[in-house]
Amino acid sequence: MMDKIADRKRSWSVRGALWLGIAASVAIGGSVPAQSAEPVSPKLTDTLRDLLRKEMVSVEDASKQILSALVAGDDARVAELAQRIHDSFILQQSMTPEDRKNLMAAVPKGFVEQDRAFHTISAALADAARSGDRAQQQEEYGKMVEACSACHVEYATDRFPKLSE
Image (cartoon, rainbow, N blue to C red; front, side, top):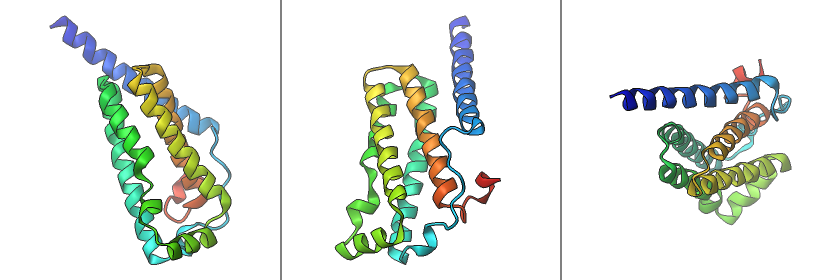
């Protein structure tokens, strides 16, 4: 019984430390850039906007599940979910040549670079989970959350206006 209580306390401590670290990273400034003058979404075609929305919902869902798996010490689940995020690229997988042309015309180079960097971070998280390195998993997860916030501050000010306050 005492072991279960100790495990539960440790789990809550890890969860609290993880969220505190993420919040501190973003609050201190992390790599969150200054607000962009123009959000990307209005420049996208309806098809691209729908594909991007689907990818973001998928990433958000997997990220929430990763947090639960992190605090449970479920390395295999973290690896599976992080790899799923890395491989998601719904936009890339579902675009026609015309969609690609429209996307490149609508988004700045920095948007594409941030997206690639985000997927690289998710691959690093999957690798850390496969090797059982929990400290590295937490660090990479924090980087993922920070990358999401940075992109939203830069390119989704219409959708997330409170991030730029």
